[in-house]
Image (cartoon, rainbow, N blue to C red; front, side):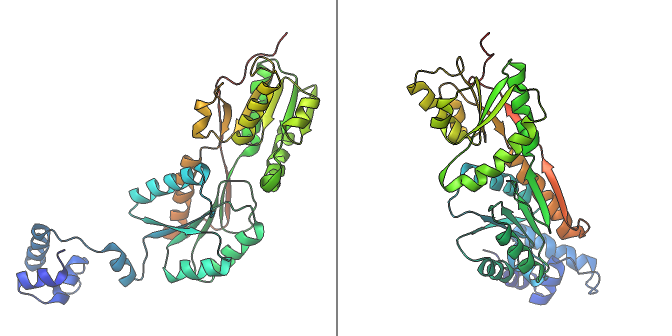
Amino acid sequence: MITIKDIAAAAGVSHATVSIVLNGHARERKISEDRANKILELARKMGYLRNEIAHSFGMGLSKIIGVIIPETASEYSGRLLYGVSQCAGRHGYMVKLFYMPQTPEQLVQQLAGQRVAGVISYDLSSPSIHKALYDGLARFDIPFCLAAGNSTIENGIRVYSDMEDGCTQALQHFLQLRHREVSLLSQMGGFASWSTNVLKYYHIAAEKLPFKKIQTCQGIEDFLKKPTSALLCVSDFVALNAIMTLTKNGLKVPEDVSVIGLGNLMFDTFSNPTLTTIDEQQESMGKFALELLLRQIEQKNLGDFSVGFPMKLQVRESTAPARA
């Protein structure tokens, strides 16, 4: 790899002179335009590539965005990361991943030690962790953005899924198909807290619409005791499990029960029937979150900022008109 030392030797000038020219300071250091142009042309012909990381550190700046994701990566966090990475590349930034099993204090030390320009964290569903991260990074003047999910945060930049909007789209779709009774299917186990949060928005949206009956079911077995013609699930995993269980119990989807999930995961298009679902648009959200973070990094004019990102209903085969 060609270095500044190689260019200096070829040009017959000092290492310092080449460094000044390549960093764009020739005029202020009174290096002639002719000499500067010759050095730049020689660097081009020799194929010199600047080490951007070393350069940014030397200038006291950073072009690295830290992204915090859960220990167990998923399609959700992967899509968000892809959007962040795509946007970062267009703006000349690099992305480095940090995983969550560490304590917030350990993460802050790593992020600050590697002099990241800013941090985006996938929603970890823990307000106390989010606050600890924000407070710790603020000590080093590192902007923080929390993206995806629905957890709240008092400080920093927050880009969350507009769950009420997505739920409203799904429930209006049921109404258009003449369903008047709907069940909201939750999830038990390790995701119970997240499921409860999603159900809250389902209820807010449903109570504003003219359904004759709205009920919450704790698992698909609970639904089978008191079935309705429409079933809205807190995730695509829950929806696909519901479809399999309904089929085993002699109920057809969508003829007997119309089912909607949440997530728009890749496998939704391979199920039978293909799954109607609420798309959180994680990739677009990642791009949007990074744009906001870069504004804070470069202009420092956002302050504490929170915005709901729109969701989109993807209609497929698992929903159909209610039977007369």
